[in-house]
Length: 410
Image (cartoon, rainbow, N blue to C red; front, side, top):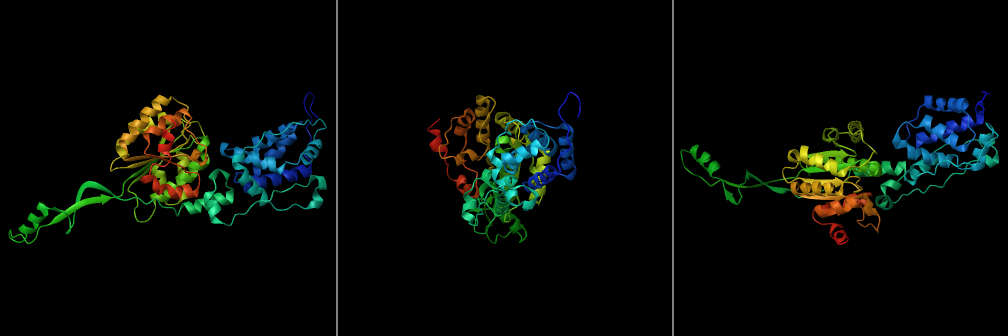
């Protein structure tokens, strides 16, 4: 006991055991957690002590979570693992009789399926180790065997296993595009235009005698694809899946697209094209994460597009390039600047296609200032929240999607 402070009591062995089980649940949910961190958590509880349930929550979070990406998963796993108030209360009473009825922070629903999936994979503990009133209830998880259900499911609501299956399915997705006419010509015996130079060169080899008229036709080639992807906090799950989709397009057999370039933005613009060229999608995503240091930050769409227009537009928007702008349009900057930069971008691209995950809501309306500023300058607007929506993107090259209908509401 330290004078002038809360009681410092060594954690009970049963509580230590449950903390170890809790760490296993976090690992199952995808949180990177080592044995040293678990030991640190136990020592922190012994050293700090606590009199409220919220202290228990923050001590574990401070010692077990090292990445902002894992906060939501930690919220969910904590709420599910310690959701029995009598069980947690009895554990805390072992450490302090001054327990107050404070509740831990409300978990966010985004990682609920992944947390539930991790809890469902946990091994059963011996019921003799815990009193009957302390036994944890487990949620019954729905196992979807029908691929049609998975294809319609929102990426944000998928469990860890479903996300892994979705990633595997994304590798097989294609986005066919018809080749575009260029100014270059190619030899073609059935071409519509005569080729005087080739005809004269052939005649010189025959002493000036013209045997036949060489012909040529206009060269067709796949258009280039440029993706500008929002990686702010509201787009975290979708941007990761869509970057995998871009990787699949960049490495698709048959050369459906020409050059594929990719840029990410949150608070600033980052060129991740080189990282996207790696053959392994996991290594490519890891390299992108290392280069883009503004994951899950704020959103400055106007500044990012302005930087793209100034530094990269002339380099990557040649040959009738198609631009995929992936963002929810929730701009924090000046809408007038965003509208001006969007207009400039639309004039530089063959088609400017906006992919917005907010279109998963049936009642979506262009009320946000950023959405209203962007909408008039895009060729089409489409959803990107599920496998079905990604499969339907081939229509985005020829159809306006929801753009025309929403324009009437602006």
